[in-house]
Length: 430
Ligand SMILES: C[S@@+](CC[C@H](N)C(=O)[O-])C[C@H]1O[C@@H](n2cnc3c(N)ncnc32)[C@H](O)[C@@H]1O
Image (cartoon, rainbow, N blue to C red; front, side, top):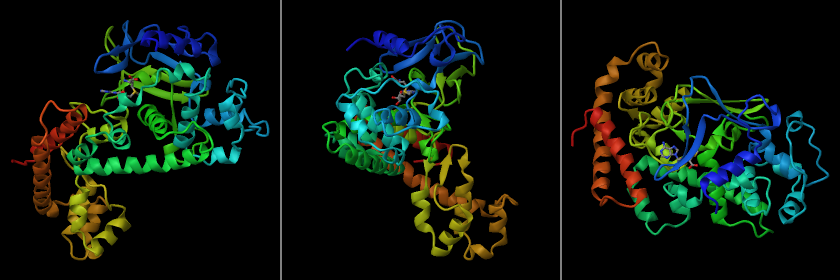
């Protein structure tokens, strides 16, 4: 395997990358000369400034033909089936290489337009990654060569579960309760997508669970969410973008992204000094979300919260459930270091009413007309009891891990540390 700099050079050549933003306009990528990609031990690859970068400076443009998403994958695959003519104008500006009737090309030639467009973005892009990563001379080779191996995404609970890590059961039992729920939800999404892709590739030798896991995790940890043409739901609104996907995450946005007819753009939303790393915020995500979805955690994360839904919902009577569902406040109750969310406040107030529908003060709270001071003392007392329970659970789990442990255990410990920090900020003493 070539080293990172050689593979990076191939990637930039492949995308016709130029350091002149205006040259070769539409079919060439632009990467500012002020940037470099470095592979730093224990941190992974990231983008760094080699010269001072000004706020609002344009840094990267990747043309549509080098983006991997629902539209470009449909355009590549259908090229192999002469019966399919793509009439939608969104396909007309894409430069797609001619079809190759190699073994992968033969698989593509059997897919109808209806089969392909019935797939979700995750399904079609993972199918494509599986096939192109095993296709000699793939057009996408330079991009595939820069994708991480599954092991590099090994902190993610999905990876230890699917790969049956020898410690998987122990690791799952160490997760905070809400993280286990989140990991289960991801596993369900994964299994559903896998069944669809496996069925489409069942007559080929290309499909294995490991290959699918690699493709699915590459997408989940590297895709960028933006409104995309042809997207069927908001989950479909993503693209993979070569080079841009070297940007690491920080809680606050330091780079902006946008997509327009000329491609995918990155610009600086802050100044960067030479040597500093450029960051982009993947969203206001807690460590639980980052670990389950992307396979990493931050030691400091201002978006951490505790999900207390599983502790509040069993306390509801059917009349509370009916009221909250009707008002759109059923489930998803959280608390962070500054206090409870409004949803949690409404849930705890509802619990204090024997006839929620008839309570004008509860309805006024839900409608934002009053602050709900009348409920506060009992709500805080109940929440304190719940947080004490959660804090005891986290403390017990932390005590059961001998540190330093496996990297996965260390990441789980960071989740518990975050929970205990919020509990302590909310007045829990153990
Ligand atoms: C879009 S990629 C960013 C580039 C990546 N570091 C690489 O080597 O290709 C997202 C992955 O980078 C890693 N990552 C991103 N931000 C991070 C951060 N702040 N701390 C640690 N790892 C991070 C995680 O493994 C995540 O799944």
